[in-house]
Image (cartoon, rainbow, N blue to C red; front, side, top):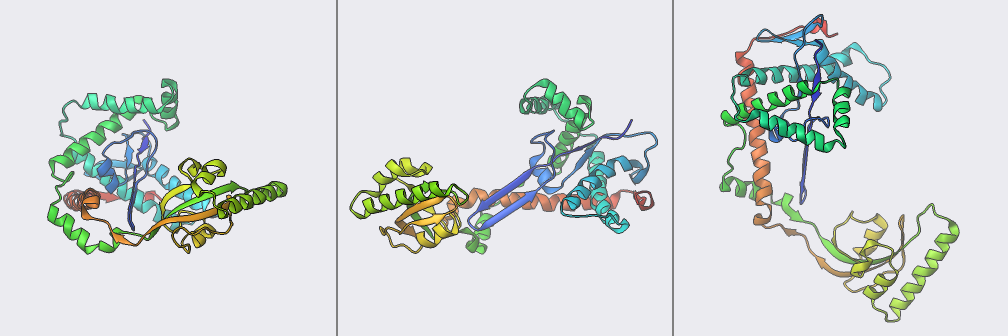
Amino acid sequence: MKKKNLFIQSALYMPYGRILIAEKIRCLPAVWGLMAVFLCMIPFSFSLASEGGDSVVAKVNAQNIYRSQLDPEVDKLLSKYKKHGLQKTSPELLRRLQKEPLERLITQELLFQASRDMVVQGIEDRIDEQMQMLRKRAVSGEQLVESIKNMKMTAKETRDSIRKNLLIEAYLERQGILNPEIREEDIRQYYEKNRNSFMRPYSARVSHILIKAPNDGDPEAIRRAREKIEEIHHLIADGEKFPEMAQQYSECDSASKGGDLGHISRGYMPSEFDKVAFSLQEGELSDIVRTRFGFHIITVLGKKTEELIPLDEVKEFIRRYLARELTRKRIGEHISDLRAKAKIEEFPQLIQ
């Protein structure tokens, strides 16, 4: 039976203030939400058993890792390179591309072996729940079957892959690796050490009126839009209320709120808009501003200086971040221990 691959991926993108924490993990839309924290630490190609004439590229405690496990992962990397203009594949490039997926497969096998004897209460029910999640994401049962077929997997193989995920998760929990407790003191120390990362930038509370006129629009339509915004500008200058004019004429979604965009920071709107908005005094009316969206009239309702976000507002964010970093560290250390105790053989001559 040929070895099949199920590649699971998840992504975590957590912005706060000036912090950007991005943890990208490979994924196919097959098994959702499994071992979310664990997968954030190590991307895996979850592979099922293989036998037959497939060449062996590595062994972990006498358990074979096959060429058919490795090739699909290398092909994915090659596809990315080709999208960026790669024309020819050299032996040296192939060797480099094979290194990371092979290490990942070895790590996967180490954890599979370590978790084999785990007993997970209600595991079949949990597998059923994951399969049900797949069905919900498919419009119909037939589409689910077709999706699994496209990955060259049977429903049984999908269940087996989910089972292995759950066993590894249980094993890591028993080892005290997942869900670490983070002390309040550690949260405060991180906050104090990284105060610059938790600053709210300078912002302005801005209202505007928009008459749409895309740059590539019909010249006559652009001319009419310009005349309309000029007329509105004259009405406001002559004493009409800005919110009322916005509600009546603006073609932005903010019209229902009198044109109020709320507090915005630089970069939220096009540069031409920002340049004017952040130069206005509170209550001042702008001239007509042209952006790719059309013509704007802008006024500023208030301003906020840069300020430190209170600890209470970011405490849970910091807690989750520190927990993930600690989990990452513990997993790395545990895998190093498993590798030190294992007999690992690689056969690079078979994967040229």
